[in-house]
Image 1 (cartoon, rainbow, N blue to C red):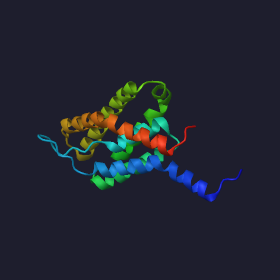
Image 2 (tube, rainbow, N blue to C red; image 1 turned 120 degrees about the horizontal axis):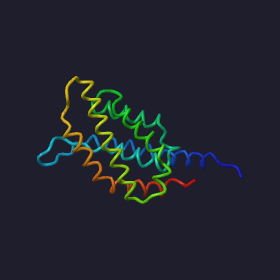
Image 3 (cartoon, helix red, strand yellow; image 1 turned 30 degrees about the horizontal axis):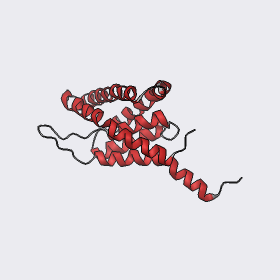
Image 4 (cartoon, rainbow, N blue to C red; image 1 turned 30 degrees about the vertical axis):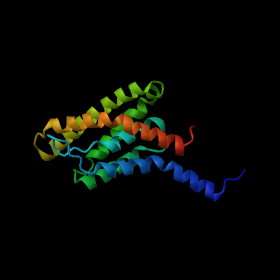
Length: 171
């Protein structure tokens, strides 16, 4: 059976769903979130997305895509170019190397794994910003961002699962 042009276009569009969701979340994270008694805190939504898709569909979010998304986030946020790209590529690499463990366990362990990733990412970003600015940046903001991101993970994981089931066939 031959595959029509429309079927190929449909499959290509469906394959772009993880990238599209990640970019939309990146743009959403650029919207300021003000919490009483705290600084401007953007949750790391793109990190969440890269984490989920690296576990469930690493063929659709490759390291080069994670790198490009990180560069886009750095440009939009006015951050030092490459810091977020480094964090997202490191996240992708760690998650793909442990993918079998994550796939074989429950959501709770997936969430615990994300806790390690998000706090590790916060420390890497804090260290990179401190080195690049030649000053010791406050660690509290990075840790608060990580905690907020971790707290929001179940909500966004639900979204990722819905997108995964709606647009992507398992293989």
